[in-house]
Length: 528
Image (cartoon, rainbow, N blue to C red; front, side):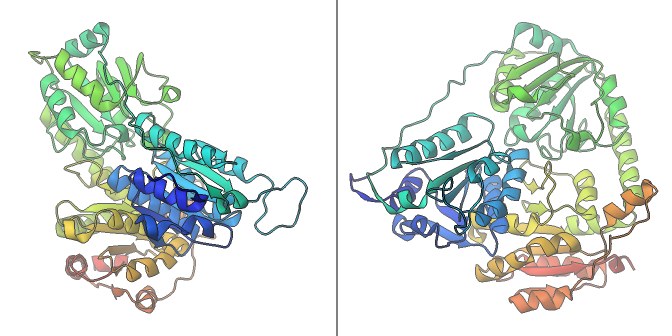
């Protein structure tokens, strides 16, 4: 970049473009307008959200689809607090997100300013990896490069950079040139660990979100060892449709018995959180190896915690096991029978839903990326819908916020446009749709061919079931819904309310080739 003095907002846009940022999600306001001064000149595309929460989820969806950081611009005060929910979601799910906000120049001696907060930086820090204020251009440049480097080298989690309004407006020198970030990938599996894994008769791998993208390496190692596998919800598809893959049924109580029968358990890219297993312990009784990037995520059941990337560990393990002959005693028939039993349990938990899930799965093109929301339909689908490759189903796993699916699907579609033939679909419940339904306007504006499967059971079904199970009268679980079909049409979207499963399938297939989003309003009535 030429050594030119220009307003800092302009310099930041050019610096981001130079570092590989090509899309920014956000909403301009009087306090952050200086960030927008250089966007078009730098050649960055801006997606105008209808709410900062939507902008944050779009950045999240973009990041999950590309592996690149999702970048968002918001204003001081309410703009930041509105995006804090997506930041919390990105933190819990290890999503690289970089949020820029303006901030007031002085708050200690002045009160009553527009968008004033007591401590904006500290508020943001509660839901992200770090939140820092850049009081000089040099500090802003250093924080940007620090964030981008950490996304590559550490566990990816959101960062927040705030810049005082007067600093954004003032002239600043050009950013420094880009410096290559390199991390030594040299790693050897400790000999004792190799011996334990190699000697196991019932080796079992648990594959999490940190193993996404390592499918070929994982499958080679599983075959070499004759190992069985489980996938967390975030790791679905990593192991593929192997005969010894128990799938994403970790939350089934019976999985503890299977895990307890394994003599060696290898956890890759997962901290085995509560939202993975829905119980206090995984159930390990054998030797347990945990592999991930975060020293703070060690499982209490692990005997060894190896701090490294999944692909590095898998390469090293494969090399160390070269020529190994498996003595595994896992029985494929046992695995099939167990999966069948667990599917029956899911069917009992969500009566009728699996018929709709199966019908939807049959009509969705191969390679479709799904963004789902907190709804019973998605809860059931995450367990029974087999994935052939990883990184193609995204859900608000840890933080568990409502309203995620639609804006995240918009971000994912912007990241991977239709010309590359990678379709995207959203699955959301009737109540969750209320949270971010305004972002339907963005999908219409951008002509994004997203089928939006709106599962409408007319209530907060999961909460009702939980209340009944706790012997609480299920009050406050029913809200008056609008006419969703007319609502979608008011936005300019296509819409349909199928009466049968066959009509639903036809509507979904047509939606993938439409010139804009299609709301497919599905109710239990499709079951007949």
